[in-house]
Structures are given as structure tokens and as C-alpha cells.
Length: 188
Image (cartoon, rainbow, N blue to C red; front, side, top):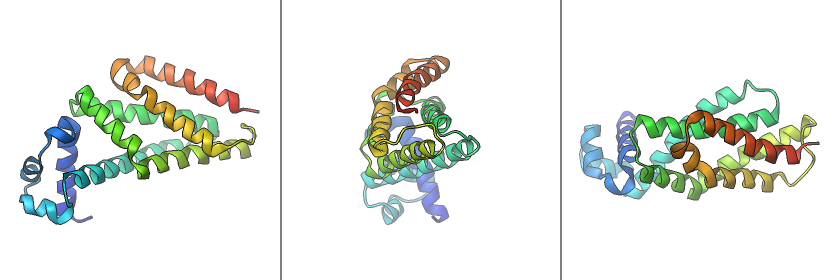
């Protein structure tokens, strides 16, 4: 990615996280990036593509930071709980940092849930840790892909609650309780 594209993505990220997809305009993003509107279209064919690619880019950056922390953890079940908590906390941080509204947060959660690239990555990561847990003697042999999909679906069902409606300590407690029970059911 070159400097101009990075400037556009940084500006787009700021606007999309603050105002959401519908209230952000290409004109505002271009002006903030210090480029012309046409330059934005040299890199992105339309606003939807800019939103999707910027969201994926942002999530990839978050994942790199999360994976660095998780790599230090030995047990697969602890890795899964840490991943779930860090995912929610990264969204909580963005929610506060960018002054998002609940509607904007729901837009982002919806995009993440409906984006095949992001969904596939999440599921593959959960599956990797479940299989790792099997090799470590923590989990029974089971349809890990289906369980990974269940973990991924469950986090979306409660995401708004954990990000917006609850304080951080209660959210962490509830995440650990809910997913701790799910993981306990898979243990040997």
C-alpha cells in the first residue's frame, strides 16, 4: 500500500468509525486525506468498496496485535477465551476512541458478521485453537469446524451487549462464564 492509499484508508477509518457508512461521504474523506475525490476513486471503485476494504484493513491490524498477545499463552482453551475477550475489548476501545454511536457499532458488527473474508478468518482461528486443544489433551475429538462456527456466531449475538451496554469488568466476566461453559462441554 502506498502513502496516498494509506492516507485515504486512515481518513475513511476515522469517518466510518465516527459516523458510520451512511453518514460518511467520499468528499469528506478525500478532503481529510488531503487528496481529490477522483484520487479516492483511483484506489476504490465506490464507497462500499472503500468501506469494506478499510474495515478489513482495520480488522487485520487488530488481529496482528491480538495474535501477538495470544501467542504468549500456552493452553488452547485460554487462547480462545483471550481471543474472545480481546476481540470485544478492541471494539470497545474503538467505540470510545471514535465516539461511535450504537448504530455505527451495529453497522460495523454487521459488516464483520457478513464479510466472508473476516468470518472465514475468525472461524479458522477458533478451529485452529480447538484442534490445538485436542492435541494438548484438553478437548475431545469433535467437529471442530462446527464448534468454531458456533463460537463465532455466539460472539455476534452478544457483541452489542458486551461493547455498548455493559461495563468492561462485567462484560469480561460474562464472556468468560458463557464461553467457559461452552469450552467445558468440549473438554475431556
